[in-house]
Amino acid sequence: MIRIVLAEDHAVVRAGVRGLLEKVDGFDVVAETESGAEVEDLVSDHSADVLVIDLALRGLDGIEGIRRARRARPSLRVVVLSMHRSDAHIAQAMQVGANAYVLKDDSFEDLVEAVRAVLRGERYLSRNVPSVERGGAVEDRYASLTPREREVLHLVAEGLTSDEIAERLVLSVRTIETHRANIMAKLGIRNQTRLVHFAMQRGLVPPPRD
Image (cartoon, rainbow, N blue to C red; front, side, top):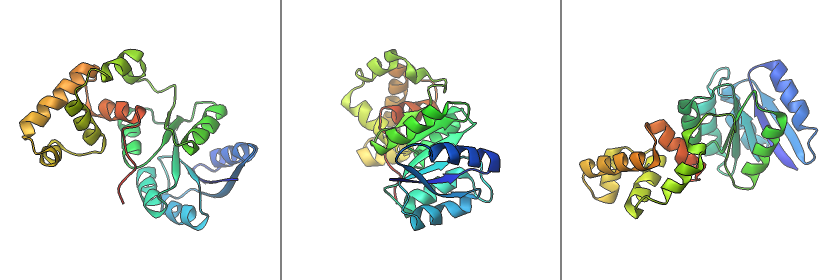
């Protein structure tokens, strides 16, 4: 049985999602909350396998809730269920440890598939999130990156700054900035959040550090 904790601040939405999840064979919603501050204790106390969480919660926002929950239970898989579809929200959620991002106007089947995907060790992103990374062209361009550029992309995905990457690779900051520019040009990506978004889709974003 898959043990799920549900964090959602709207009672009607929370009840609806819980009712639907509990109809899925093998799913068990072991706890629910409207408060981000309670998430950490709930996933730990109930040995949760999956946390389904909104980003807007009472007391403590979902981003910090995810960070604390993953720190308390490193094996936890996190599915964000949110109304926010911006690159910034998605990138931030993934950087703190979310494994999947589902929109509230997606179908219930999409949410179930997201839960199943993260349990398989995969990442899942709503098909309704507009993204330049969805096209096969960008996937093909990844192959054009040099080994060094891929290394830099991995470190960018970890959230390191250019200064930190330069120190890690024993290169100048200017060289790292050049690599960044080349990576974005080759992938056809114009900003940092989309770059992290792309890295997440390829599975390059690692679990958060303890």
